[in-house]
Length: 347
Image (cartoon, rainbow, N blue to C red; front, side, top):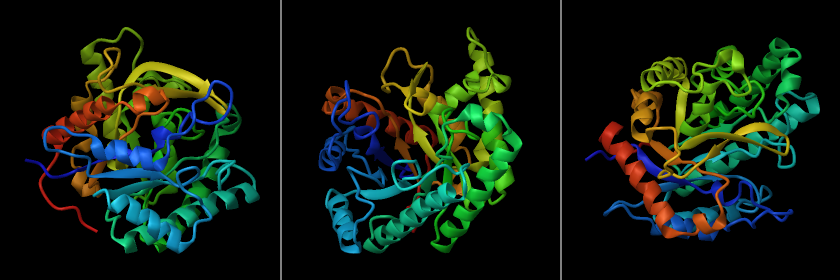
């Protein structure tokens, strides 16, 4: 039986798309998300850990060291490891646009400093032995980026190189989230160009999400780089999928299991972003287990020791239904059975 990669749940589905605005549901508390995750079962298998977003209401960025250690105890007492952490790089949290002016970019770097400090405390507390710090460009103006794509990509790359220096000093790695709503990362080709320009693969890599990278194939927000057209055959799909994953897999250091029904939607400053759907959704476009194998090939050589489920924008009714998490855990187990390996997670 494969023991790696470890199976994690993301805590941010309890936050993303939640709030106190019109037609919004309230956020699900950290304690409740942890309890829902801890209760999930697939036979004797439980979730091994969680990945977390470092901002309110689950995490106060002004937390003291003692408060962070108390949070570590809360996670650890449920038997969980803590894996990848999402740095609060966006305007309105701690950070700001990596493509912005000098002040904005310094705020972006402040978010990296915060995440690295917190990650270190979690490591010292013994609950974080693997995982990365996830970031993006924190810039949703893809049209503005496109007005001078070369210069703007170079500006983002310069910010990421500075972020990489901070991360390296703390023994951390940064993973750039591949999602169509982030300027300079909104297509497989543009994020590849950015990674190559940053040019620090030992510290800055790619975070692949099955749902988001499906939309890369379809060319949303970058039709010039579409690898598929609507009405594609199964053979055409896997030919395109192999082309995309062969380009991005060597950079991939963090991986999200997810499902996508092919739809997109706009929200706030995001032009378009992918809509996750449940693992069991009959409208899902992906054979989750088969597609995961393209990303997990040679995963140990890239330092991957865990995988995480990601599914946002679900109703609170679905998120608080125990069977939702049992179904998700089953898919995670299926992925590990098919593509995992045996061993012990390292520090």
